[in-house]
Amino acid sequence: MPLLMLDLDNTLVDRDAAFRAAATALLAEHALPKTDIEWLMTLDASGYTPKPAVAEAMADRYGTALPETAIRTLLDRGAADRVVLAKTTREALTKALTDGWTCVIVTNGRTVQQEAKIRNTGLERLVQGWVISEHIGHRKPDPEIFHAAAQVVGVPLSGAWMIGDSPHADIGGANGLGLRSVWVSGGRPWPEDSYRPTHVASGVSSAINFAIGTT
Image (cartoon, rainbow, N blue to C red; front, top):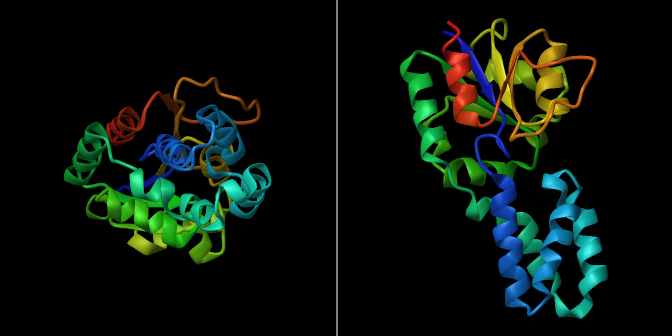
């Protein structure tokens, strides 16, 4: 049974769009400049900026105009409460399962947040399992998290595919283990010289369909 490993944020779900929607609502609710959304998106850096650093920067910028509880709610639940699963992604995952693939989510992040995204979108019904970096103590591209993903679903890692949007975490991690990979580019040019993905796809549904069509 072939193994398909999938990144979560900005791969299976559009985490940045969800965070933008939450941050836009926060600015409007507290009568803060709506143009600050671009500052917030840059500060957040697709979730890669540590949450304490984001909270501190927001507190410094807005002071008493933005309560600490509002900042905490944005960072803890903003994206998780608004992520959606595209119909095309749902269809591609369903086809993978029908074709006999074992699908497992491999994601960096906090356990509560990431599991909320998985359950809120119904992804828990479309994959056989998931591993989250906070829970297992290893982050992509560490090889341990990929081995853990294979162990969770009881499928050998050899022959697996990894699909993700991060050149370093997803594709670099797969490359280090000699695994095949599809980079979800979103129209971006490939940035690395030392390694490349097996395939480049503009979106996750075409990435899944490519991988499952190779067997």
